Every structure is written in C-alpha cells, then in structure tokens.
Image (cartoon, rainbow, N blue to C red; front, side):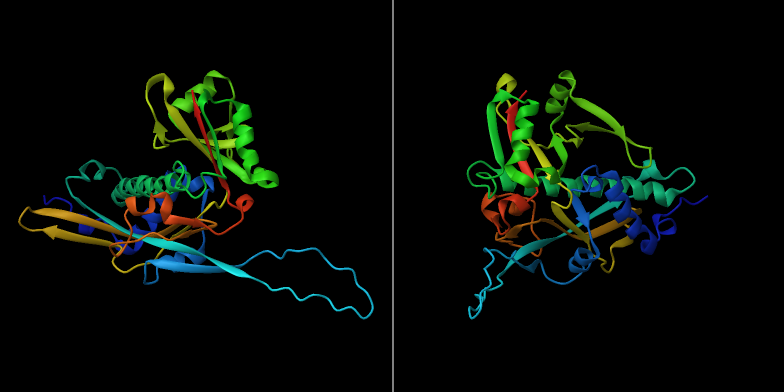
Length: 318
C-alpha cells in the first residue's frame, strides 16, 4: 500500500486560515488580549510594501473660554501625527519526516496544522518580545526613561509592581496582563501572592497577580547571574500591540523533492505586530525586517503621550 502523501492530506484553502486561528489560540500572549487583531490590520498586512503609515488626530487641548458679547473665540488648530508599522513576511518549509509524528489519528490535517500553528505561535511571540526589548533597553530604549521602574538591587515585591503600574498615572487600570520569567513566577508563588481563576467559559484555569493575568515566558530579558540576576517583568494593557495577518497567495503549498522522494509542506505568513503609540524609524535591509532589525532601541520613536502607551517594565531581583 502506498504511503499517504501530504498533498492528499493538506488542503491549502482550509489549512492556511486554520493555522492562523490556531496559532492565536496556542499563544498565551496573543490570546491574552495584549495583541489585538482587527480587520484593518489584516487588510494592511495583505497589501504590498513593508512600512505602513497610520495617521491620527491628537487630542484637543487648552482651556475653554468665557463667552462675552463682542468677543470672538480663539480658533485652535487640530494637529495630527502618525504611527509607522512594519510588516513581517516569514515562511517555513517542513519535510514529511519532520511531520511524521502527526500523521496518525482521525484528523491528520488538523494534527499537522496544530504542529505548524504551534511553530508560528512561538515565532510570533518571539518577534513580539524582541520589539518589547527594544522599547525598554537600557538608556536607549524609547520608553526606558518613562515606563521603567528600575529596582535591580532589590527582590520583587507587590509594592514595586504597584509603583510600576502607577507610571501610567490615572491610566494604570488599563494594564491587564503581566509577563514574567519563571524565576519571578516562583518567587511570587513562594510569597503566596498568586491566585487562580477560570476563564469566562469556566474551562481554562489561569494564574493572576494583583488582579492581572499572569504569563510565564523565559524569553523575558535577564542580566547578571546567580543571586544578583536582574529580571525584567512587563505589564501590558489590552491592545498594547496591533496585530494583523494578511491574506496572501500561496500561503500554503505542497511540493515534492523527487531526488529525496520526500513531500514538502511550505507555509508563509505576512503579519503586522505593532506597538501602539510608537513609530518604526529603523532601517530594513531586505523585503521584510529581521527580529534583530526591530530589537534596537533606536528603531522606535514615541508619538503618543506617556499615559496612553499601555506597557511598563519592572527590573528587579528574586
């Protein structure tokens, strides 16, 4: 009996959207609300080009005026700024041997799709954390002087976290999710400060800290070693990042290497992952930026007011 070919299993028109949706489900960061997907950004990610300008009007400001007969009101200008987002164009190919463990069970395409979706969930999450690093890199990060609470010489406490949230002033309540290194998570557990709640559907149990959803990710930046290690913990509000996935031709293809006698699955994604309130000003050498090209502090410029940028960072020990 002939072996089952990937081309007989994977239907590109079904497989591609399945992978996109499943990736968002598998990523704790993407499904937390930090990165909010919208049709506007989906459409943008499907367009040609690598940089996209997003103009917006600044809030109205200035004191009101007292009305008086014969006195004209002052005409104030409405000013505008713009964010600049960058599009990531990524792809990956797998041979049948890479997917062999998935070729079993009742729904083989879904099994392979889950493997591919898991890969993209980790990949997109890595890109997001690279951008976060750029925001808060020591001294050169665009948000380092305004959105960082540096307590590197002291172990993390709940008071430090509250002080970090307060960097946003009266918008502190907009912060909903905290991402920490596993070592920080262990410290919070020892302090008996973590609680566990179920989601709205009463299905999934997740941890919270000071009312914020808690995500553990060891890609959180650390420095130093041993007892003097410094850990960066991040707090975000819903929609801190804009997220969009473009509909592109040939997002999924199946090929065959006749010399090796191996089927090949190719999957591509075009997506936008943009920190709201900032403008990308870095250089992109190729058709699409690498993670390194978005991870430098000089790559980003702030365009929104401090309190409207829903991300802050705490540097502390454990």
